[in-house]
Length: 110
Image 1 (cartoon, rainbow, N blue to C red):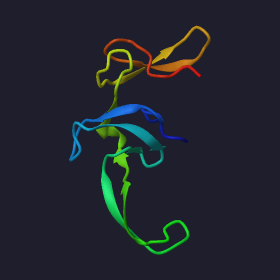
Image 2 (cartoon, rainbow, N blue to C red):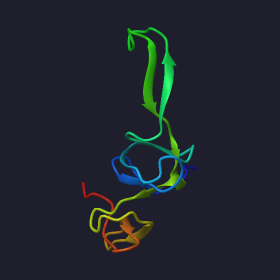
Image 3 (cartoon, rainbow, N blue to C red):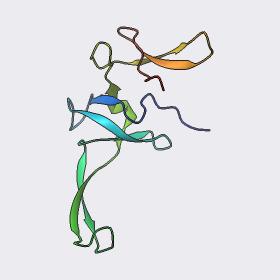
Image 4 (cartoon, rainbow, N blue to C red):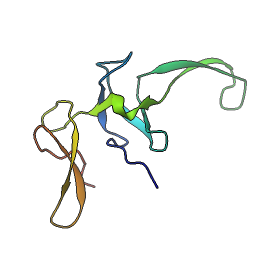
């Protein structure tokens, strides 16, 4: 069974708690099994890397580490505020995510 997560790749989110509280960034990756997300520019860690074809210099690199999904809240494109997520069933049977504050859609129509 796949764990459900309230954010998707590409969502703009606000970090609601922890060391990076108040920072806003875009979700780069969602890790549903770990209940975690990787947010651009948030939770940067230094990692030692050996010399390899990907890293010919070697040394230390800075990369984003995962954050627990409970620490992030999506920002509604309609009202521009961080919000909780509700699900709404459309007439055609599709389920979309909507803003709990204004009712605007969080899902971008493909």
